[in-house]
Length: 353
Image (cartoon, rainbow, N blue to C red; front, top):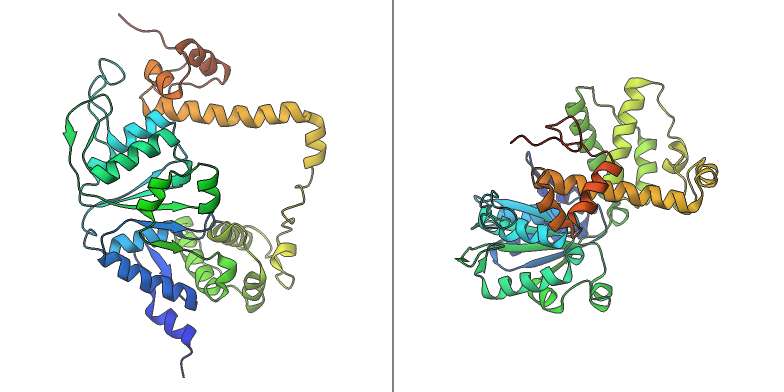
């Protein structure tokens, strides 16, 4: 006789180029059933859960099962861009909004008309933009950045967060109006450590996926390895499991296989979260705390500047406005971090007349 878990495995697997959903545990079986219901009711949904737990996958499943499935599904990372630039990405901007030669750009809301928008990490969206978003969600029409003409679209909004809602509201990281609008229905995605029945299936799926991408032969997992993986808490959830499988495959094809008679922590020498990586203390002492922090901060700043320069096609004045720094400061930072326009051979190409 088939067990309840086996029934879930047979009946609740969605597999396509963009979506792989497993409901081998009772709790994920309920979430799968909930997604089917939510797909038929065109309301906003707030999806909560730890980082890497599969929130985006749930959002994609809701879209795939909905009447909007023939239209676009677009994800916007609310934590990745400054407020002005994020506003332009969401609502678009008119010609000349930043410079005289800037063309018209349609935002995600226009591009996703009749489709679904996923606002990833909604609690990281700047407060000013959350207020603007709330106005659009309530009134529907909006204007492109730098324009006055009204744009009408029909989109469904899904949102995710890995922050506890009560904390986000208390710290004013989440607009109350936004929360009440999005929380018409809330889905709580459990972490992988609460879905241990799924780990064997996930290991097998990721192994075949990674092996295919790498043109390598997939490697089987022994019963001891699977048992160790099911005992491990996976604080990084699916992302950590994926990296583990990649390393396991590389070891099999590049060198001697590691024994998994011990638990996953010991087999891969993963330190507990409270331990520093080997050699960290000596490197910390070599750098000194101040210079180490400056190094980390500098890498983050360099990445942000490079991203905005790329998005503005290296229009430095537009980038400076989006980054909210002076033009001279941006030029200094470009030189400081040796950020080079890929179309040129130096940070400051000479302009031709």
